[in-house]
Image (cartoon, rainbow, N blue to C red; front, top):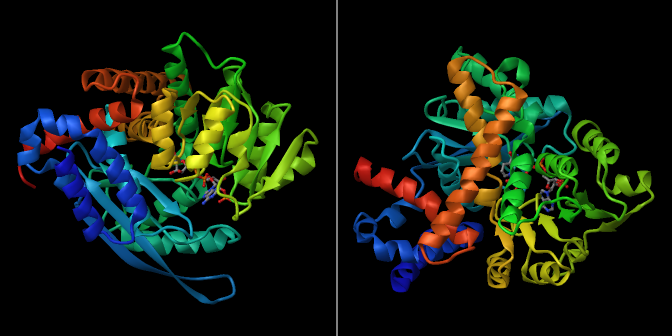
Amino acid sequence: MRDHVSAVMSEVMAKNPAEPEFHQAVQEVAESLTSVLERHPEYRHAKILERIIEPERVVMFRVPWVDDRGVVQVNRGFRIEMNSAIGPYKGGLRFHPSVNLGILKFLAFEQVFKNSLTTLPMGGGKGGSDFNPKGKSDHEVMRFCQSFMTELSRHIGANTDVPAGDIGVGGREIGYLFGQYKRLRNEFTGVLTGKGINWGGSLIRPEATGYGCVYFASEMLATRNETLEGKTCLVSGSGNVAQYTVEKLLQLGAKPVTLSDSAGYIYDEAGIDRDKLAWVMDLKNERRGRIEEYAMQFKTAVYTATDPKLDHNPLWAHRAQCAFPSATQNEIGAKDAANLLRSGVYVIAEGANMPTHNDGVLQFVDAKVLYGPGKAANAGGVATSGLEMAQNSMRFSWTREEVDDRLRIIMRSIHKACVATADRFGSPGNYVNGANIAGFLKVADSMMDQGVV
Ligand code: NDP
């Protein structure tokens, strides 16, 4: 079976050159699936693996817009419609200068398995642009979003493809995108999630990824009869996921001590408390400032600027028990993983997508620590997007408590599915195999039912 997987990987590399993140994501899943393909020759005959790695559709388009000085700007827009076997394509939009086809394909691929794990009927997709919202005025962001949606609107719809936010796309951007879609199509539908509460959004959606990730960590700890109370936690990023991870950690009595952005990180030995978190939320969401300012405001904190010459990030070398990478892909390299294990970390719950390089993943799995990969640990965001879609369809809103309860139940069931599936396929305690296989089986069986399409 290893030969079969190697052959598939060779083909992926040859057919998709210069897409290292996509190769990495496929490699990890394909390795997890060797035992499944051994037990299920019918999947091999139907070429399920070969089909699942090929997007159903890729849309790539020009996004022209005019900046505040009257200068024409041109960006590139994308939507990857990866797999619709179990529901409409679903997945966020990322606006960041690093965005390219390979990064969005890796994200769309991960999304297929993640959405399957949520128990909700959602296929997988992802999209975005190399547009950089940083330093742009609200008017520039609006004009960009309107131009982006003018093309995207041809390809999406409440029953076809339902985008949401991701890096660089928060409530402001979703508002501008929704407004333009409504104007073009003359219909008010749940075509995007992460909407404002007054116009179809769900309570708890902004909090869901961070909260869900912390719930997942609690479930992993519960397998060892432990809780998060009193645990020191390293958190990276300072955007949506990081902020609500810190909020939930505080509610559960843990002590978060770090936050970061692309320029550097802060370490606050005294802990990031509720007041400091409120200050960070204002800094990042309203003033759109840099995390460096935290250390000027709070004297218990030390700021360390990112050093591109280093082969590791010193954030991951602080003493702690838990880590919540919540910034971006591959932020934990081989040396970072070793540093984490050395400094006492034995719970890693990934808020970001694929934040750990495959070398690091192997170290975590070998060390038998509680390692929750992103496609399981951060699935609470898209799960709550699914709950937003359900509320939109019913034209009804659930209370905060109702949504939070459902989120908690979903995270518990994802955890249970990972543990049970890892056991069933001979790798107990291995959440990577558990998540990949459990996510795969539901999609694979649906593809089998639907014929060669
Ligand atoms: P935000 O844009 O709100 O925040 C992103 C944070 O990560 C910022 O602090 C940003 O710093 C930092 N960051 C981004 N790129 C880099 C980089 N190349 N190097 C270092 N730091 C970086 O995004 P989210 O919080 O929504 O997303 C964070 C992660 O979580 C992503 O991997 C995303 O795919 C994943 N995710 C998000 C979900 C959601 O619901 N929002 C759902 C599931 C996963 P700076 O401001 O300097 O760029």
